[in-house]
Length: 268
Image (cartoon, rainbow, N blue to C red; front, top):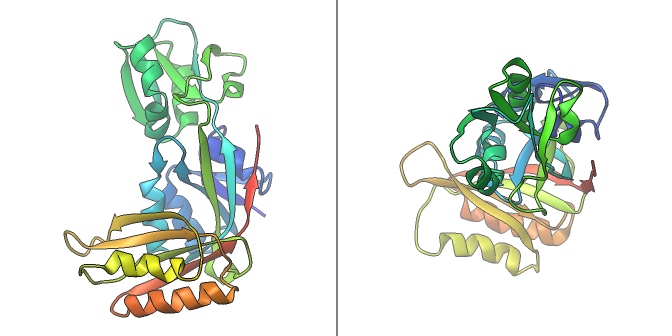
């Protein structure tokens, strides 16, 4: 089973994808990964959804809201950032914008004068460091290989740094069984108490919300949809009752059930 994820080889997404299958192919953006799974080109995709330091990955939120896909598993993996370069002498640090943000304090303290260059992935930044002695990359220390030096290890601002990944599949594989579920809600409404009503649908059934996030709908300014993760399977009576209330609240919009799934911790 081929798994598509963020490339090139050596990204943290690649590390998470290998927990699904060893046959991994790459795309240059999260949107392209979601689109490829939505089109049926691949059976599985792995996309980052949330980092413990920088929060949600908005590109993923927007892509899965627009696609007809399922979430079939959650993978949580620790993030170990290292500064990789040909030598200690460089004037640019290239990496994914999330990685640069996760190492902000270290970079400001140790390299206040270097230029920071956001690129499509941590592995792409490491590739640039291999090609150009004036560039350093940020990535897992194992990515140094034989031609780069590990200038500094564990440079992330917090040692608890970890990222959640969603394993996505075609919508036909959507499941109701699992310990967690994800939905996207577009109420197509705006009135006092709207968000409270959505929250009460779950609170009244003793269902814990592990994440709720608003994103612009793209339809008009000030119009939002909500990404909600909750700790119950869609098969449960209480979850079904909560979603009936949510669907009534969003009667002028829509509710997308991305499915239920279990969490898996992968250590590297």
